[in-house]
Length: 363
Ligand code: ATP
Ligand code: MG
Image (cartoon, rainbow, N blue to C red):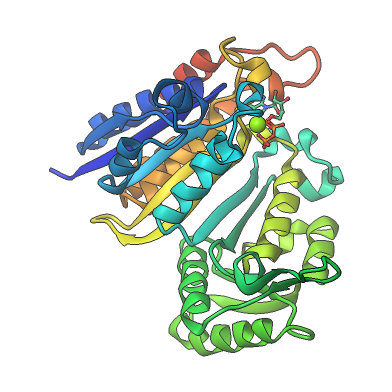
């Protein structure tokens, strides 16, 4: 029997509620599809700080490292915003070291909008009436955020950041772009600033060199300023966008906000370790811990459920289960089921647990 280990890190705020729903659905899917799923929970964020004095305890990190995938809720909240030293605050003390320790180099952010939620989008109705489906693949561990030298002159009059990319780093992120495009509409748009930046010229060169390995994928290049404009002008032209760290940071937020549904957006960060079904990864909703709505059973669990679907696909290789889950989410939306954050005025709403139940019934 196929068997996998998944680490659950509920975290803070609405994290435990949405991860709770996702864990139940994952167990249900495993049972139906006939694979064994060992799910173990560990503390992270403010919850871990309160109990163990550190937002990323050793045993939490160890559990992640011995698992095939990690499902994270969210961390942080006003209670821990003033923790001293700042290195023990949830975002800095848990998320950054976790990503680094797990070698997560590829961030996948689908911006998908169901046609059932088209009115939530900030775009003209004709652009989104059939929904939207874009995937932004962002390089996560290189570029100007990490390149050396970096810093200030002694007198503070000059600051330096350096953009560095190696052929190896570019190739491995482009590979994720090509491979994911293969499972979709086979269109890959590589975004750079090759008219100005040397790293971008290397990026473009590597992409062109790899293209013959993927004759079934249509590769195009676009300058980042043009891409930012095209996303707003007509996002339907895109399938997969692959780009470097800073451009991806900006474009993934832009693409996400086109959908207008924060509670619906999943994400995946892939590592460099192979699992039996794919690649090790960390999966989490794009939204944060939303402390003001925590504990009220009103949070939208769909971003976390869609993150769980990505987990099934990329880390476990359970594609059928992933598709079944995504179809069930879509069906629930088409049937008019809404949590408060995605409901139109006067539309009836259901709670977190009830939405989980509704999705489960539709699998
Ligand atoms: P950060 O990204 O730094 O954590 P934040 O804490 O402001 O920023 P969120 O926690 O994502 O961001 O919350 C932003 C707003 O969106 C909040 O008002 C919250 O109520 C709402 N929200 C976020 N996620 C959900 C969700 N899953 N269901 C319903 N509402 C949500
Ligand atoms: Mg937050």
